[in-house]
Image (cartoon, rainbow, N blue to C red; front, top):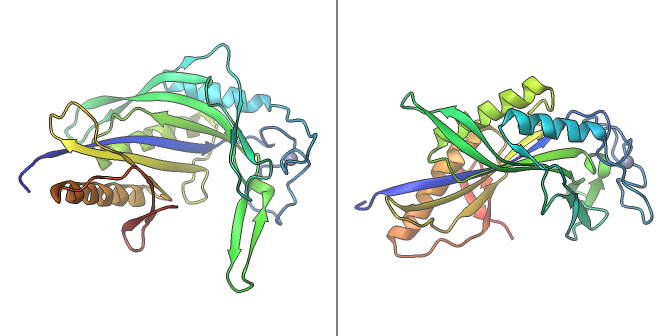
Length: 264
Ligand SMILES: [Zn+2]
């Protein structure tokens, strides 16, 4: 390899908040439970049902924002993000697209060389989780469980300030420590109460512009995240070395095969 490359990484981290009840209704957020027992007309998207915001969600989002040096928007609002998929009974997700509750924060991490570095936080917004689809290949059908539908989430969107897997892990560990200390979430990657999507691009060292980025999903441990970053970095550099272009797309990481595939 003749050229030298730099990796540019940003993260979208979803965290399930530790409230007793869901974001817009009084159904339980408890993990598990028989399918569709923690549901009501609001979180199953019945026509005419009225969402009422859970105060604790706002308080947790604010606490995380303040602990990560964010500015707090005095006026914020929710928006409907329309998409049609069976895990989403309303056909829209209630999220914050334009005026998120927190913005422009940062976290300080320690780097491998023993120094420190600030990673910018673009924004933190509140939103609701979707239900879960279970694909039963034996019965040849798909089933849906809405117990998770309406569980409160915050999404923490970083700036593209990280340059390698070690910085990403240091950022995630710091974030998890802060959120756990605040009691806002238990941040368990295996149970999905903390989930990270990795946006990654490569560019020639010293290049002024970012390369084309891809998003890698389905990462449920820090080790999987580190392996996915290494795999995706190599894949993109190989494409560029062959004179081909990186396609902007979402890819699903398969940690057993240690490779990623484009998602439809
Ligand atoms: Zn409900």
